[in-house]
Length: 409
Image (tube, rainbow, N blue to C red; front, side, top):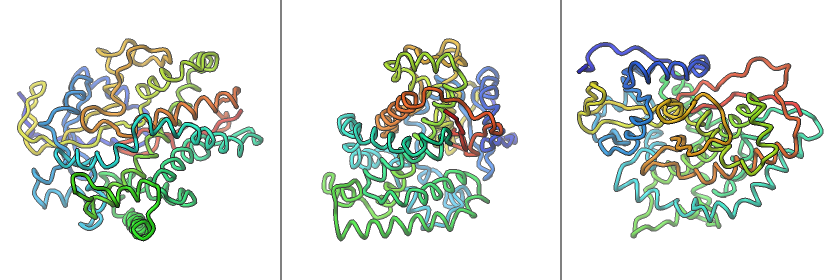
């Protein structure tokens, strides 16, 4: 049994270069060291789980918790978080970082807005947005899929659900990118602080405005929410709105962008989908598996000592489940590095599992189905713009998405 006293190598999970070779790196770890101890740039030591069965178990195992406050000292928390106390308090008190019973209380407040029935009612509006975005570029014969289609579509949808002015969407993107790209990087987090403070200030104005003038939207509903007589605390309200804005578009931007990229890389599969649009559901599931929008699940913490593959994970240790690796695990998927839009029984972990399963999964699926079908129907000759430099993955820790994706049609 190996313990955790030896120095753990620093792993650069953040760079575009790492993303390029990540899948071969994961394959090596799955075979040789499925529970891999490494150091993050903020000095935090963590365990990376790369096999499907281990990742799946960790996502559901109540020995691994989401809120480290009960385990770590204030000093350890400060070292890890970098953000000043106020900003940290307002951005991290969401259901994403909570455990039962808090988690169930917070999730129940927004759950009804994301039921399959509620999401299905958005179909017409999502179709309208997709067509409007493509109308703008149709005559140009080229576009950057990320900036002109994959980003605006989900941000317009989530802004409308929350009751936020869509004119502010580029501002959101700037704030959201800054926060996501600075995650676990102390220097970048310090640089991003003014943007984070602007975001918090914006949310403050929004909450104040909705308190005075409630409307038929999610922010008003959250302010008025009563579950068993409990309202959201102020910091929970900020954190929930922050989570819905960021998670409400980041995942889908990557899902649409990665989907177009995967199809353009595999022309036979692109043709198959164009000839059989009814394959769209299984195509989306295969995109989620092959180039999932979330590379790594958000951190969990061992609530007690856990022995896994002869490695001792101590109480208080951080755990990271590599979803991208689990979704290419040879023991679970036949020919895992093959992209196949007709793949059956595709039990990927792209949206997580257990009580933290992605609340917005039905919305992300619907948005990406409509986006891809509309794109392929209206631009059947879509291909990568040959004049562009090699495509680069965004330098982020949790996400997998392209910086840009220039196409011609």
